[in-house]
Length: 98
Image 1 (cartoon, rainbow, N blue to C red):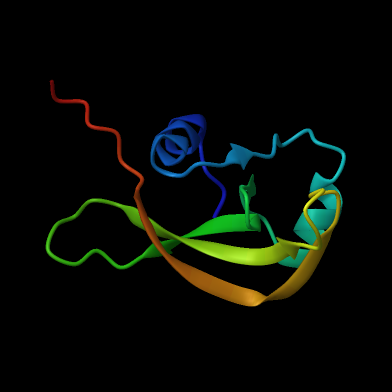
Image 2: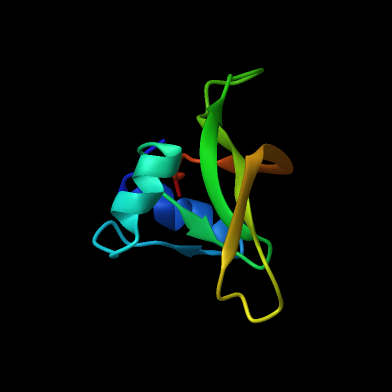
């Protein structure tokens, strides 16, 4: 899924990663390989967030899906693999009530 800036900010509060900016030179290749998403890099590799069905409440949530792992400790190269859902579920809604 493509995220807006509020969703990206909300995700980064819950997920220790960096969002790849839309203007990054690697974006065309990433979108060709994986489709239109907001991409995140973390200690494991390349990830996206996919929406999950709402259960008890109507809050929008997404699961972190790993698409590629770092090939070594230098984190200079990624090895794509079949998408793997992680255990991490992100609350994508900001709480506007204070």
